Length: 301
Image (cartoon, rainbow, N blue to C red):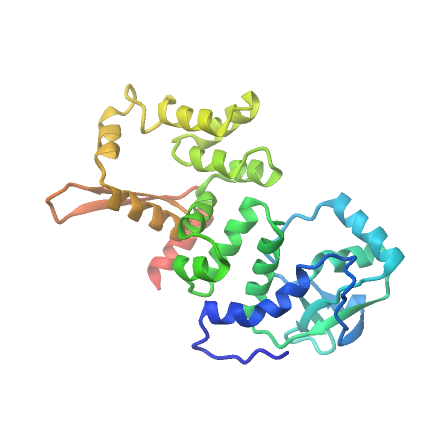
């Protein structure tokens, strides 16, 4: 199947056109209904997709898959496209786990389905495949949504409609990327859940709070209470009461706008607006120079 390219192709229409290919990826290695490959390709002629949202591959799961491939071969072909600028080579669209496991099993050739996808479609398929498998950790999922919004200009609403997620899920997911790298590493490793991370975002010292949550094995509810009452937190009555009162006085629309901006920028955004006045102040908090560079680049467009 060749996907027709068009500058006006909307994400929803594109995803519906790609679902037939993604459904191939949703089946298990041991399926009784394998797809016939277009070609057998030397494993060294296939390379991974550099925009693959998945960054972590579980070694034990790869070993299990490698043993299965050694016994049965690769049942479901990988989906690939011609590698841009590299004649005779292919780039993985979906199926990188099988490619890695095939190398561990010392296979010389692998079955592939060749598709004529552009860069947007490649990323869409990779994200859909992983999200449907519930295989991504929260940071990888958030990074995938961020790529679709920032690199390809899709909105939270269009992503939510196409991927079957709520807009708030997309927004809350992307907001996690505003956390410091240390907290994100805890999230990747499963030491913190998404619920913990969302509570920690409200803290002025998210690293310290994250360490305490892990050390004391606190629940999400306990983390939320600690984030609102901890020393140095904007919700603390004794520390920054003026700021706390200002936060509580914000109306629902202002808070929703803060959340949307935070999700879009992947940085913590605060809006200070006095009801009845036309002026105000927006504060964007960056956690690294890379985030600052990205913000400057976005504002300079």
